Amino acid sequence: MDTTAKQEEWLASIAAAADAGALAAVEKRLLGPKGEVLELVRSVTALPKDERPAFGKAANLVKQAVEAALAAARERFADSALKSELEATDFDPTEPGPRRARGTLHPITIVQNELVDLFRSMGFREADGPEVESEYFNFDALNIPGDHPARESQDTFWLDDDNLLRTHTSPVQVRTMLRLSKHGFEPPLRVIVPGRCFRSETVDKTHEHTFYQMEGLVVDRGVSVANLIHTMKTCLRVILERDLQVRLRPGFFPFVEPGFELDVNCPFCAGKGCSVCKQSGWIEILPCGMVHPHVLREGGIDPEEFTGFAFGMGLQRVVMLRYGIDDIRQFMGGDLRFLQQFAEVPR
Ligand code: FA5
Image 1: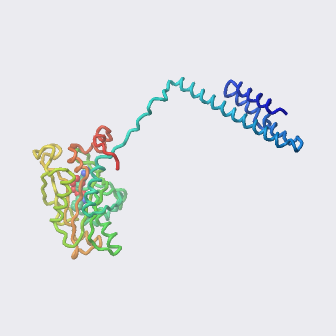
Image 2 (image 1 turned 180 degrees about the vertical axis):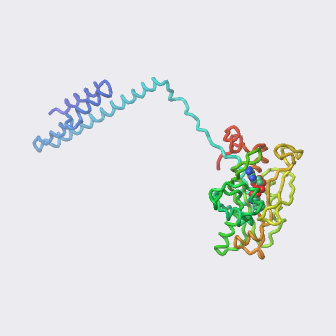
């Protein structure tokens, strides 16, 4: 059989196909189950043995040429189909694509990261605890029994009789001390606990139902109020990037003795009195104190041998002072115009 003539005939029928449908029909006729090209290849078995090698080789070359021509024709039709689709949709493929919007860190995260870095540089480590907390760790272990009036000041979201959404990060104090003493370790202990807290409060300019605190706890031999004040002042100076006036006044928390409230002079009115500081000229920012002996004992640490200090910083308040934000509701408001002002690239 003249394979060259056959090849020419088949290539011509491929070239003559006017569209993708016609090409598919040609392909079926040539390479389908009983296709003409395959029949040609198979016909080698009918030849005398000495003619087979030459014929087989020629038939395979024809098959390859047909396959290549079909592939090229398929591509041509695909290209022209895409082209006509593009023309119909008025799409300009040379235009640059849409720019992907880049997220930025939330201002609370920015300040929290800086605080964590600062406290790490002072030898603190980070600790964590559950947001769904037991009544025992949130209150009882912190020297706040069921009938204690201090419970009234922390309106609580109860989940059932024993569990609640933690109202502060202080429960992690006892959890951390217990973890340490359970394994036979002794202080020194220096931890910070950044975390989310919840209170069933009426939301206003300075109060949210969901807010962030950063707890700090230091336990060692001979820890004093002087260590506490120095640490707090260092922290505020670094994080607020200025020397604000601070004042320390007695504050009551059942889990510290003595307890303090560290206030800063209101930067929004320079202490004259405004709606942010509730006309007092001061913003309460850092409740703190010396860890109560009962709490050390709950954590498995001997209060005769060790003393400690603790603080519970309201993170939103620090962020508000740092950036001059006068309404806490902005943080959870989801307004991108507000959030994008703190454009810091995630690290
Ligand atoms: C406490 O939560 C104590 N656990 C703090 C503490 C820790 C005292 C260790 C002593 C030793 P207080 O309820 O004052 O204290 O809250 C601490 C800070 O959290 C407040 O100063 C305030 O900045 C912030 N905070 C409290 N409630 C809210 C709220 N509803 N919205 C936003 N911030 C709040």
